[in-house]
Image (cartoon, rainbow, N blue to C red):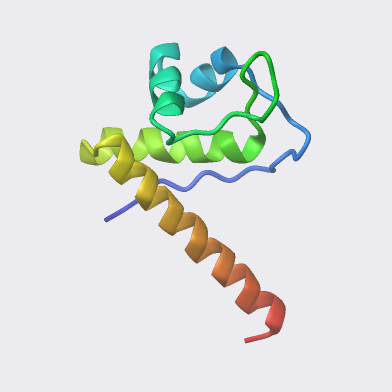
Length: 99
């Protein structure tokens, strides 16, 4: 299994609209709405208009790529994205601990 790696800088304060997220991920606005309604993507709490942070952008791109590459179900793609994110977090912890 080969996944394409994207390098970039996360901007903690970034907030993307649904349209901006769709454009950045190369998906339709309908795709974004369906994935939010399915609980695969999360919107910032309390916002009238859906807003997404930079980590949401990374997650959405990863899910879209998994779905396209492997014809994965959205829930399976989200689970895979969760596992990839958890492994990355564990690796960062190991690096910080000097192991």
